[in-house]
Image (cartoon, rainbow over all chains, first blue to last red; front, top):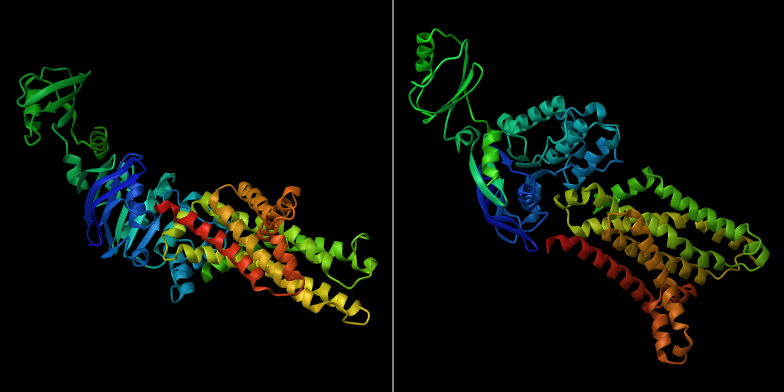
Length: 299
Length: 244
């Protein structure tokens, strides 16, 4: 196991930020850590990176305890904090060399050159960090997190504030990294989780409300399936089996089914034929992750 | 520690703070010692560096807080302090790296002032007629005073994310430690009691003057080292506070 968290609780004074959460992440998995703002995502990450101590419970990274062996934990983890803090008046290369030296790497210059190549920063290496665009700054953030070749990467909202092109590039970079490493990333953007993560942990008010594969989570909480059909003319659908309700706007009908397992598309087709109407379009609407997220975190 | 030390040194000289502080120090001391008629050595006729050594602490009151104000405040504001705490480097190493970097800058600023010493040495009649013991002691005292001021500046910087607040706070604390106890001890009602001597003893200027005479008293040494340690320890406590 790369990350083991058991019965972790964190209090800020009286305020309970994490309430007895437990999860394990095996090596090589990309896990999305989802939740509304203030749910405890960053707190969990800060405990795992030894920035804050927990109030109770155990957090382990690659077998090392965050309280007893912080130095070992810190060398196993690459961390990109929320809002990506960087020394703005340093040059890209200078900064990465500094990070390499903090980690006491044997051959800092070679490793810096390697990271510059990997994150596509070679051309920008002699610019000051404050001159870079947000996307490039994010790459510097990822480069500093990976410079010591850590086993575990913890990325706190790695894609916030990026434009769609930059978003795509950073996602590709994370997926590339995720093939060899354990990655834990937090976000509140649903598409991101669907695009990158194998597994999703949803956290709300300091508690884990769901922990499953991205696919399974989508079906979670789904009590009914919806079929959206557009007919050429209005018609009566009362004779269809297994229906809970029907809504229509003009010729577009939303048919809600009682059971998600039964397929009634053939019945709909025959009904349309029998009433001399034709089907212009028909689709089964899947409940997306966003709706599940809202349902789970609005309790 | 080495990595933090060199980063800070680089940062001093890439952001002009280093050059500005050193330039300002050398310019003002040079002007006072050689140029302005009221104070300069040539007019006074005595081959001493006394006016330099009484001016330098006053300049340090401004220069050292200006050097140290950004050390932690800036990192707090950028968020890099949180970032560096997640790296395999201890708070102690970060603190000492920054402390020695600022002290090194002061050390470098003091080197060119040796020219003043050699000039006066050459100008003395007979040549070399200068109180060497006093000069060595004064340089030593000045350096110890700088180390106390640096640790005070670092502590003030660790208190706030606002550099200006850190600067003013450090200047006030340094000024109080330098003169404050002296002024308090001069109240009439304290006169004659052993209390006024005790209060005077708490101030920096008392110990600085004592070292300047060229006598290296361990009490003065211990005083300066304790002040430096005290404020470094308070800064350490300030950095550790998040864990409580």
